[in-house]
Length: 333
Ligand SMILES: [Zn+2]
Image (cartoon, rainbow, N blue to C red; front, top):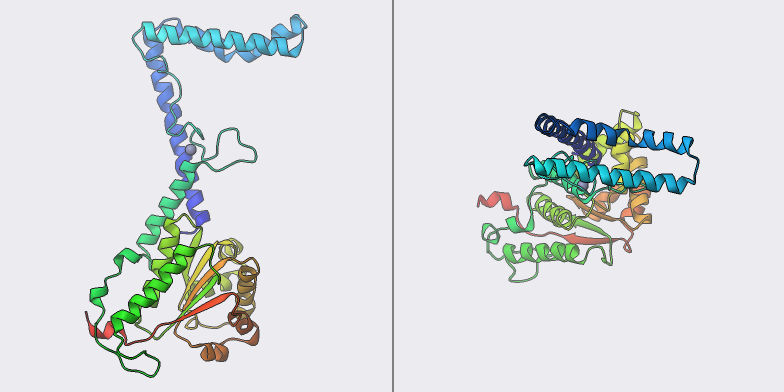
């Protein structure tokens, strides 16, 4: 679920919550009114207060502030009488007040009276929860706590780029620590871009998911997409499909964007143009971007144009992590 979808869903929920609160208030009011004969007239007097004050102001011209003060005094007096009547009949004093779950926003999602409208903390939390539930069931649900080093073979590896006497487990733990350090340092990282290179089966998606969830848990506005979904959003934008601009802008605007398995997506006409636009926008604004890919830098160069490559090769922005070892999935552990 995208953030804007979560916002729509949350607004719908809040609107229902307000309706419930109002309905319950009506019910309580009716119950109290049947027990307290004078309650209805007190309530209608209070409801008519603005109009009756206005009439008074016209018939007895005075300063506007005098009228406002008079209306305030009358309102207080009426509230006092209503509370007293409720209390004498054995009801709580605030029995007929509307009861919002959040007084701060009165269940609108926006801080009451704020201008420009400021999102309430309860609303932010709800959006976060909606996106979180969705995410946990999705492809990028893994987090660092799920990391099980015993599932990684502890056998010494051989290979020209592998340091001597190093096991698969040691290599993977080292990679995990680098990924974790990036999250710990966020947003003060020296390189805001992070590319994880490695063959299939070395746990790239797992590490990307861990980083993504780590940042989400810090409250970062982060989005994770597969390269297929990235291309799908680009394609929709190119064909001007519904909500396509919004879905693409979300990738540009996210404080941290995670793209899984760049290089396996089908290439289409104008794909590069949008990919370039996305990378440019993120790099220029120094937002964080994490990418995994099966491709080495030279292979990336074969696949993408000079324009995209010149962005991906910018060492001031990108940090490269190379995963080494055997396909973990082949060990069947
Ligand atoms: Zn609230």
